[in-house]
Image (cartoon, rainbow, N blue to C red; front, side, top):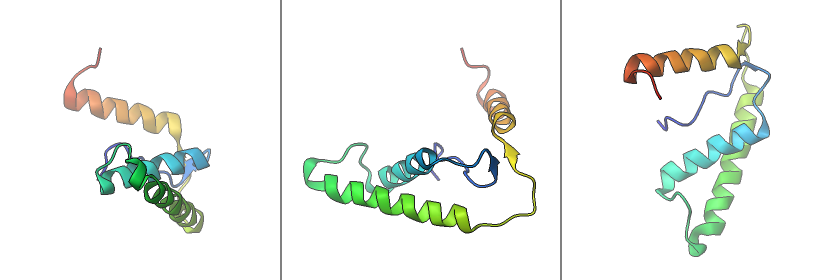
Length: 91
């Protein structure tokens, strides 16, 4: 799993198109092994990012839950606390 891909479902405010595209970009980078594709692979890479973004949007829009939406700030604070516990305080 790409550590930089974040959970996007059930947040208040909902995930933005930009966040879905960023997650798709990280996923395609991981699969392809390219951080930036060559000119020869650029079209295929960009098409894959758009396809994955569409699939992510469709998934997020079709999921249902009875749980209350999570607060982004609270979840970010929890992630920072987990990181500090695992790696120590960051300077």
